[in-house]
Amino acid sequence: MDIKQLRAKAMKLPLTPGVYIMKNTENEIIYIGKAKALRNRVSQYFGSPHNHGIKVRRMVENVNDFDYILVASEFEALVLECSLIKQHRPKYNILLKDDKGYGYIKVTNDGWPTLEAVKQKQDDGAVYYGPFASAGYVSKAVRDAKAIFGLPTCNKHFPKDINRNTRPCLHYHIKNCAAACCGKMSESEYLDSHKDALSLLLNGGGDVMRKLKTEMQQAAENLEFERAARMRDRIASIQKTWQKQNVVAVKSGLQDVFAIADGREKSCLTVLRYSEGKLYDTECFILDKIENPQEDRLRLLTEYYTLRDSIPGRISVDSEPADCELLEKWLTEKRGKKCEVFIPKQGEGLKLIALARENATEKLSRYTGKNEKQYRVLEDLGKTLGLSSAPEYIEAYDISHTAGEETVGGMIVFKDGKSFKNAYRRFAVRGIANDDCAAMAQVLERRFDEYLKSENKEEGFGRLPDLILLDGGKGEVNAVRAVLLQKGISVPVFGMVKDGKHRTRAIATSGAEIAINDNRAVFTLVADMQEEVHRFAITYHRQKRAKSSLSATLTQIEGVGQTRAKALLKHFGTLAAVREADLNSLYAVEGLPAPVAEKVYAFFHEQETTDGEENV
Image 1 (cartoon, rainbow, N blue to C red):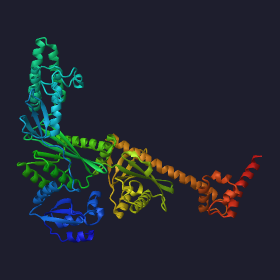
Image 2 (cartoon, rainbow, N blue to C red):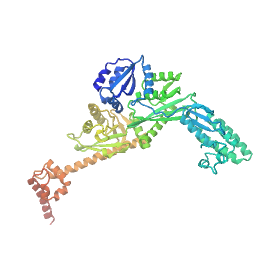
Image 3 (cartoon, rainbow, N blue to C red):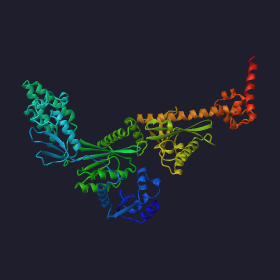
């Protein structure tokens, strides 16, 4: 079906809750969604493409048909949507690649016991502890516990492999293993260390620390200083490595904290999982760019907990998801008792959100290869201006003239926090004098006329910026916003306000100002852009004024007007070159008749003769 047929079919849908299923030409399911009113939601896809983000447009381009399932309520639609997405994993749904699962601590009982982190229980006679909420964290915890107590991490089996090696490996020399394989650890010492390591994993550091301190004191009293030193080192290792960690069983109460960092093409979701005030797991997911913050947060939360059986009593989110009450009802039903979705505004909760967002930003900047510090400045700028994501591609504009003469506009681009000179552009303003607001409006109108001719390019006029900054105040902002509104283009526009000494002071909106001097990095970035666009615009203005002055000299010659003066300067480059040109060179100038060329030659050479006579 084409778009018109799909829209006609969508307009026949009922205004009732349901789930819609988009399919491609091969009848594959490519997208699943829910709706409170099917007709309204599905018909939106097949309206104007300018109302959709890139990902939705791509999905719609691949839709050949759709099915739908009616349900009794929006809640049933949410439950069915989650079930179908989990079953079919459609291409255009937000899909979390989840390689994590529950973890177990395995203790073998053949020979000397060993500790292992595994994801599945097996019927092999070993003892399993768990399940624990994160297999990844269990693996790290077991590795750390072995290092603290000098237990081997190799595949050797004791006691049969003792003394098969003549010398210990690197792990012994970096004090991560006591080298039981070389006989440097007795069976009783091994069993004590194994017991302490298992206690640390299951019960935390409290009991083990007390035991080690007692043993250290006893060893010191018995003048066993080497043993006392080992106990001291283990205590220090636990304090350094373990105090901020805790393996938490699935049945324990949890709090999860969600935050998203947005880039231009990708976003990153980070989940921090807490128990009893301690962070026990972190998960990060790189996603396609978040285009609808509320709807996408709803989908991310539902998919995340569709993949997990462990749901905490509180879920903190950096921004409110769509249908929050519906989401809470679904989470509560799945958990079996109340679950609250919370959006912190202050205090400790807000600090946890900030930590989650910081982790997401770092992960995203590493994934996209961008400098983390620059990305954070852009993210702070976006937050200051109330943008939904960090403005990675910024255009700044300035107008320059002298008493209304030779008015020009300059456009510079900052990409990923740095000047991007390949995308700089210049404008000669036409028919406007002494009106910066009108000049700015003309420049932006011409810029976006070019965009509409060549949109979807990577740079230059064919790419929409994430942010527009104007050298000026609310007058310029209002003038440009009117241009964008008339052209149906949605890009945030702000002004860069200067103080009495021509230095950056604040950001201007259509009717107020936003202070930026509290954030030194943001202030510096805006000031750099304002200074650069001013330099670029005034340089162009001076060039234009200089050419105008040269043209004025040439127009003194009979038969030479502005057009012929520009042709001469274009051909020769400078006034000096015109002065030194011979007649044959002047005859070669396009659009310059031979009689006029002779008058140009005579004008300069008569001046030289006169000058020479005066100097005699």
